Length: 222
Ligand code: UDP
Image (cartoon, protein in one colour):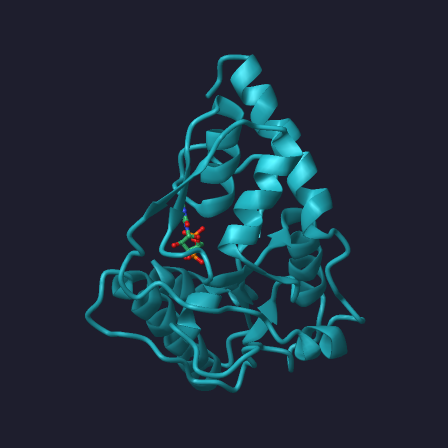
């Protein structure tokens, strides 16, 4: 997909954006993650096709930039959530909210001590818009995410509290290669994107997301 789009951008002389990911850092050994960090990715694990696929796509973007002077904008997106997520996409925010609203057990993988930093969708989109408006010299890769870091257990407790649910937490096995910690260093984004930083705290964004999923359930759409 990436190489086809790069070919198209080259022919049309278009600026091209890559939605890359914090997964390029794998299970990171430095914290928070800066763009200069090369990552710690298992090349043959169950997550590898995604992680290595995105890493390969970044390589291709930079090869096209060097070889064909293509204008590229590479964003490394950290965990993002918000209204219009798919209720069954299997990710933690949608899982926990749907489980809490249905009164089902909350499925916490491992001990829930692994961390993630959750960015509200509108903040992320604002970052994209600012990145696309930068001069040609700004290629990225540039971290976009909310530096507010939470354990998954804290997220589960927050969702239960905000929904007023009677759901209880059940512990399930941690999938292999699940990163233990993740937090973006957004210094680069702040410096290059007109002091961009997230404005919606997790509590606030979760409340809006709960309203959305509740609406889906009440209208029979989930
Ligand atoms: N997770 C969990 N219960 C779920 C879904 C996910 O405890 O029902 C955990 C998962 O093991 C991971 C974290 O929540 O540690 C974030 O998972 P997600 O798939 O949303 O994002 P990613 O792992 O890609 O950051």
